[in-house]
Structures are given as structure tokens and as C-alpha cells.
Image 1 (cartoon, rainbow, N blue to C red):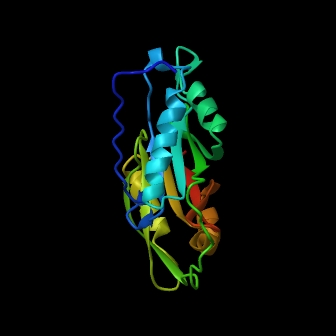
Image 2: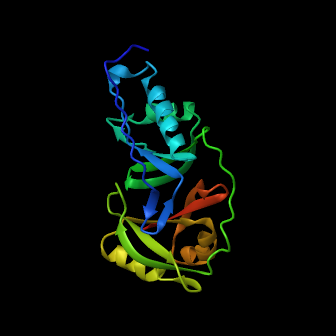
Amino acid sequence: MNPLPLITLTLRIDRTRTGNQDWSDDTVWLSWTYLTERLHGQGWGRFMVDELLKALNEHGIRKMFIATSDYREDGVDVYAPARKFYEALGAEEELRIPGYHSADETKIIYGLVNPGVEAEAIDMGEPSPGVRFDSIEKAPESENGFGISWSEAGVGVEGLDAATVLANQQGARLIVVALPDDLSTLAAPVFTAQGYEKAGALTDFYAVGSAQDWWVYRSN
């Protein structure tokens, strides 16, 4: 690996968030990270990720989720080398949402367990008896995509139909809802009745053994 005069890594730890009420204290996102082409094939990418994981150890971060896509330019899958690199590091593809970024661009999420942090399953308590879907918001990095925020409230499922109608009125091409697997199970019949499909899940998102389920609605 050829030496460089200086490499500076800046790390900011934020809670992993996909909605107004949705977070995890010990997971983070890595998104749209680039290494200049002249440094490819010299080991700098692995070096940066190794250094990043060391820094995450100090914050007790047990898992990193990596967001990428299958964006194509002039017929070339631009991020294919990056995905191959993530897989070589041990990251596993956990979720694909076709048409998320645009009609032709799929959102792809990998999960990479941090070997430097020991994680144990924790008791998440009794599942909530109810979930309320509160409001809509523009989905990040999505062309005419919307998300729906939620909160644990009441008994049963409330507000999904109204939120879906509102998003459609504002020109939604697709609607994405991400929530804990126990609330997902509770709301599954309502999602299905409203025309949503379960896209998949991010494993151990909230804690070991507690996944985040993703549901997608596509406007006709």
C-alpha cells in the first residue's frame, strides 16, 4: 500500500434513524462513501473501514448498515465494485427496494457486524398493543417517494389509510414504512389490505433478535 501524506477520518455518531420515532442507539449508517480512483486496489478502502470500526468500538456500536444502490450510467452499474468490496469485508445484503431512488434505481442495504463489540440479546419488554401512523414525510434520496412516521399508541392499528391517501394526493410514486417487527406483525393485515407489500427486514436493528421490517406501497 503506497503511503499518502495524510488521511483524515471524521466520525460523527448519530442514532440510526428511518423515521421520526425510529432509532437504535448502537447501530449506525454508512452511506455514499467514496475513494478516489487513483487509490483503488491499494488497500486504502479496507484501511478506512478498519479504522472506522475501531472508532465505533469506543462508542459501543455493534453493527453498521451500508446504503448503496444499483445506479447505472451509460449502461454501467456504477456501484458494483463498492458492493463487491462490502461483501469482501463480510457485509451481507439484507434488503432491496426496487424503484426506491427512481423508477430504475434500487435501494440496497447491507449489514456489517462489528466484531469488536460483543452484543447480547436483551429483553425488549412486552410488545405494544397498538400503533398509530401519524404523518407523511419525503423519503430521503427518493424521487417522489414518501415515508410514514408512526408511534406506539392505543390498541390496534390507526391512521395508515389516511396517511396513504395523503401521500398519494401529494404525488407519491411509492411509500415506505419501516418499523419494529412486533409492530409489523400487528399491522400486517392492515398493510396487506391497503396494498402494501413487505420488502424485507434489517436484522438485529434495534437489538440482537429485534429486526426492523420494511413495507412498500407502489402507486398505480
